[in-house]
Image 1 (tube, one colour):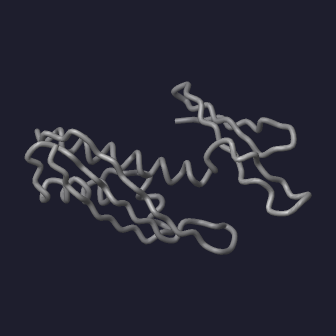
Image 2 (cartoon, one colour; image 1 turned 180 degrees about the vertical axis):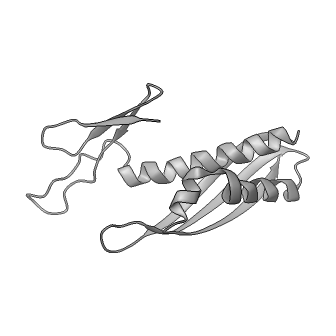
Image 3 (spheres, rainbow, N blue to C red; image 1 turned 120 degrees about the horizontal axis):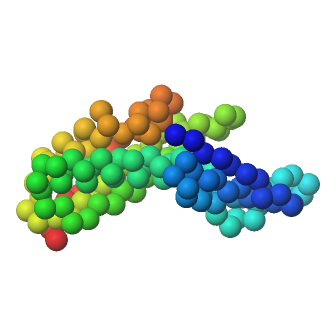
Length: 145
């Protein structure tokens, strides 16, 4: 797997990543906190937001895949991530909570719980990496669709 990240130049802190699969991902920094410091233009997600989103996407993928493989009638899945970061550099994630909302027909809470557990304990590479610095927790709701 590979990725190239290029600074957009100028007076901002915008970057574009080109992934190995040929997709583009824009990132930007927050506006400068103080005059004279580098800052972005707030035109795209922050780099650490993309890391958090990647973990959510990786885990949601697992949950849907596991449920479908088990022949459950899953119709939707979303995950809301809430994270805290260290106050000093490097400002790694120190706590991440993932809350899943999974919808389907006749979905059993036990099946969703098992899919979430398998994602966190076995399959989600992004969560496994982030768990090296962050306390990971999860919860879920099942919605009849």
